[in-house]
Length: 625
Ligand code: ADP
Ligand code: MG
Ligand code: ZN
Image 1 (tube, rainbow, N blue to C red):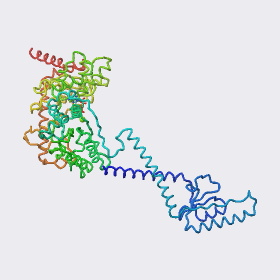
Image 2: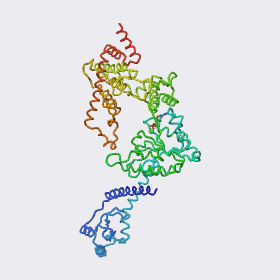
Image 3: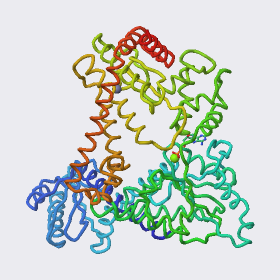
Image 4: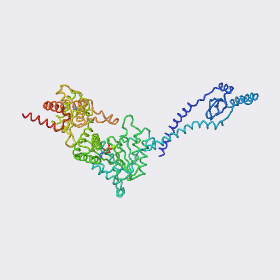
């Protein structure tokens, strides 16, 4: 607490000093006084131009001219003069005044010249006082100004300028309940325990049970981690301090650590309560990682967090929750017993979970009666809770744009496509040649997807541009599956290369349209070789090349010999080439079908599963003849 104040005061003084200097400079610039040489001074004096002289310091004299408009002499003055000693100036002025008196005696009263008024400051005290005042005044002003600014900022929002204070947002009672979180039943069960502890701690402490101090929610973005934390607070009916990891890491050194201290101090006053640190990876990264000796500030913050977590008793009634989508990069110290000793994995929802999430978010949206959540859930494999919420929102926007009062199934279907690939761009001008190329390219994908055993079903083929793509082929799996087999991956690569293969067969030239297909296919092939042990190189992990976490894996990155690297490249090349050959041969077998599909695409722009089925049925009938 003291420390925090000291930091604040020092910062304040520093800023005030700078302001004061600026102010003093500014004052100086407006000050039009001139500095006289001794000769100039004598000249002015004898010319009768000086009305007042004030000896302000041991070595300084300030001067007011006879025609001057200055009022508050001697704090403001027309000219100044540096002198060697006081005695000489007094003598000079006295001599002048004597001369004036002498000549005045001969003149009538209204023609007499004025005497020069000479005044002194106390040489030791007074001089110091004025000079001190002249520096302190701007300083005082600056501090006052600063204080007002801070006050105002604090009123506007507590965040700005409150250096040490934490930015935790305290929510007295969270309105979120477990019923707002759909799907994730297992996760809910685990968290219910925490709720029970918070609402009835004695029940646990009586039997000597140790309650987890920290709960770490791990899962991909959008899976409802933040929502879960709020729901726990809401169900337990306890205050909820929420702060984001990035709030701890600040420009000012030492601020992160003091924020952590404040946060815990504040929380202890409100127990039982929940502290929720969102995106803890911002502070909780592995210490000693990062280039250039690591980030001291972040490490200090992390250390402080660990100290605070150790600092209070397990059964104090404060539960710390945190969320991250990168548990792998967290410092292991965070996971020790007595810290985040409970980890809950929040996964992307399965079919049933998606259906329930859709129902939760459809509660306040007018949906047409024929909409089946089950169907939508089946079509949205891989969507997280946030994606599903977004999907319903997109659908609602589409309905509103069409001036409808209810959301129809078609809105939702378009919403799915839009969230996956960006909106359709019907107005983009496409030349006839481009259309032909796109049509063959997409037919190539579609035919392979349909023919290859392990590929997902073709849902939609279109030559309407969407997002970056000139056209698209949508496939959707029938069910969620966790594992990808080698056969399935090879079919997938083949299908991805189908667009390029079709171009080569029909147009006898290739275009740049397939670049992202090639990129994705190569990435899969690389993973097959280096991570999944699916090539002739065998089951070795070859470093992978997933996200390189700067610093930590920097040195570890090159643990593959040059010779192995070239073998990896060969293995990748072999997979790609084999798949491409396969794509060419399948498409050559279905050349007639491909032409028919292109015709259909020219006609309708978008064809669906039924159309593809029909084309295949016609082909079968033809060959039976
Ligand atoms: P995370 O913190 O994991 O990135 P959020 O909790 O911020 O995800 O989720 C974002 C939004 O997605 C939530 O506000 C909520 O509307 C929706 N959402 C996510 N998961 C669920 C779920 N299981 N049930 C209902 N809504 C969810
Ligand atoms: Mg979140
Ligand atoms: Zn393609």
